[in-house]
Structures are given as structure tokens and as C-alpha cells.
Amino acid sequence: MKLFISASLFLFTTSVMAGDYMAGKDQSPVLNGCVLERNTQCPGVNLQGADLSNMDLRGANFKGANLSGANLNHTSLRGANLDGANLDGISGYRLRAFRATMRGAKARNAELQGMQAEYLFAQGTDFSGSDMTGANFSFARFSGAKLQGSNLSFSNFEIAWLPKADLEGANLHGANLQEAKFGHANLAQANLTNSRIHYATFEGTYMEGCTGCPFDW
Image (cartoon, rainbow, N blue to C red; front, side, top):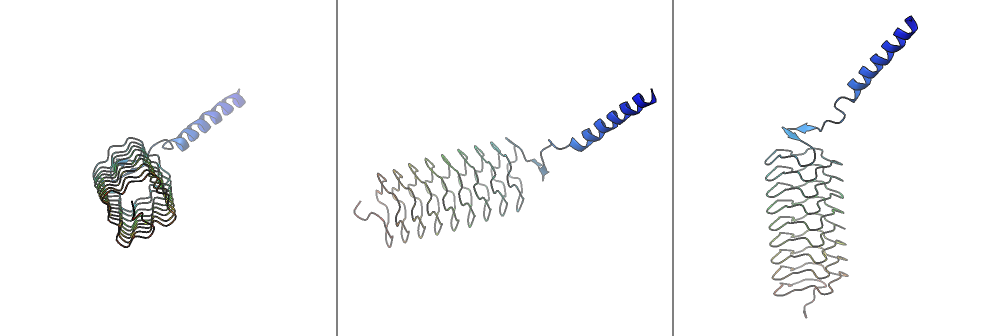
């Protein structure tokens, strides 16, 4: 009988300890009042310099938030709202932003190599000086965006819209620009060497000093 009671007590104690250990394991982290999970509502939150790497933040609302200097490496922001957000200097290697919105946001001098952002809405966004080598922006919208001095080598802009975008001094070496729309964009001093421009349109595009631009378009 004593053996049975002891065994039951041991099992109960073990269960409680295991429950205590697992408590909080499924709880999402909270930073400055923002619960870091899918579909979180954190407009205007200050997450400057935060480590948000490898997180699942799909559908999050970070409209107008300060994410400058944050670590977003391998994070999913699929369908997230980043309109007007400050993303200056972020690290976002392989950041996933499929169908996300970044209208009017600032993402200057950011590390966005390998970013996966098909159908991204980035009208008026400032990516000046950012490294987006190998990023995928197919079907994305960059109307009026600022990409001066950005590294877009080997990136994919197939069927992307870039009317009136400022790409002065941008590096588009080896990029896929097939069917991209560059109407009235600025490609002055840009490098399009070895890029694929089949069926891309360059109506009214400024190309002074551009290398590899289709001057006879």
C-alpha cells in the first residue's frame, strides 16, 4: 500500500513539475506591450533594435511602427501591414513578405538579401542604399519608390511595376526584369549589365549614364 501511495505521489509531483516547466512554452513573447504572434495589432509600437528573427508574424499590423535596426532574419511577415513604418537599417536575410504592404515606409541601408516579397505593395517606400541581392519582387508594386544606390543584383522583378521609381545608381546586374514596367523611372548611372529585360517597358525612362540600359527602346 505504501508503495502504491509513493508511486502515485511521485507521478503527481512529476506531472505538476512538467506542467510548471511547460507553462509559458506556448506563450508568445511580449515587447513594449506588443504580443509577438500572428495577426498581432501593434500599430505605432517601438521595436527599435529588437530581435524578431525566425518569428511567425504573418498578418501583423505594424503600421507606423519603429522597427529600425531590428533583426528580422528568416522572419515571416506574410500579409503584414508595414505602411509608414521605420525599417531603416534592419537585418532581414530571407525575410518573407509575400503580399505585405510597406507603402510610404522607410527601409534605408537595410540588409534584405534573399528577401521573398512577391506581390509586395511598396509604393513610395524608401529603400535607398539597401542590399537586396537575390530578392524576389515578382508582381510587386514600387510606384514612386526610392531605390537610389541600392544593390538589386540577381534580384527578380518579373512583371513588377516601377513607374516613376528612382533607381539612380542602383545595381541591377544579372536581375530578372522581364515584363517589368519602368515608365518615367530614373535609371541614371544604374547598372543593368547581364539583366534580363525581355518585354520590359521603358517609356519615358531617364537613362543618362546607365550601363546596359536599352537606349534604343
